[in-house]
Image 1 (cartoon, chains in turn blue, green, brown, yellow):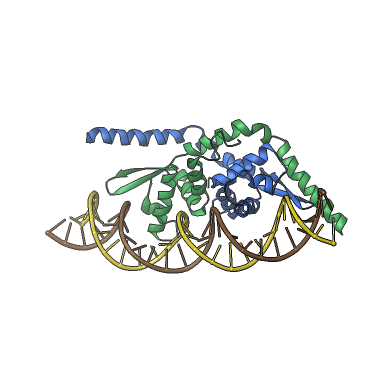
Image 2 (cartoon, chains in turn green, brown, yellow, red):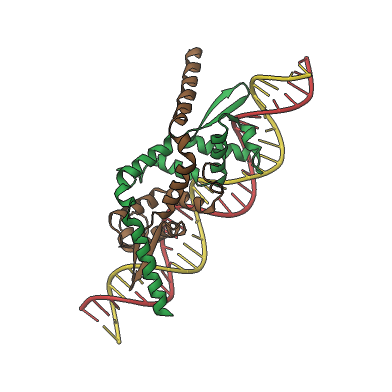
Length: 123
Length: 123
DNA sequence: ACCATAGGTAACTAATAGGTTACCATATAT
DNA sequence: ATATATGGTAACCTATTAGTTACCTATGGT
């Protein structure tokens, strides 16, 4: 169980990874890292798509708890929250470090070499 | 740009994160980490869903280059490839470490405190 | 030679994701 | 007091995802 005893079946993991799977949402995170506390309007002004579409992306990020918000008057200030990513990262590195550092890339190399050898034989 | 100068808009990033966004695919990775070189049949035997569904998951992992395969006779041996994840990880930690270590979680805490304070005032 | 086994395609279906426009509610500024 | 700006909902459309069954191909064992 690389992802932890219950990580591969963890629904929170689903939420985080699928939140990060869209370029627009990663860009929102970039924006909020650069300038924490941006309003919804300010964020959506960086996109060609409609404000509503951006708000849906914000909702997805909130669902993954990658985004925290604080309502001030009629505005909503947005903050990136890295904790869920940190948690995944820690679980990963805990159970995975031995595999990570070393023989994994070797397997990749070996398979590629095998493929290359096959190509050579074919040619 | 947390994710690198072109990371938030990197289509490879999309592929990797959306591949990891499904519990079944994370479980496949777990299996292949434990026993590299499993066949398609062996992997699919660990799932309730049909072999074809599993093969589609394998195709998604291959699309993200998280899976390498080597055909041997009528069998296909499967290997996990961590390189794409490593690349994302390195880019992340490069440009993000200062934000990561420290004040980020503080922001989360502050927002939560602010919310808690609001609740208290309301009560 | 033949049958079972491993893998792969094609075509279909249901649900979800990503986007739109139109409309509503509530603060703020004048 | 009223107009404007910010944020939020609702309803809808289209494309993609995740799964199915049915069928095909090729390798291996007997």
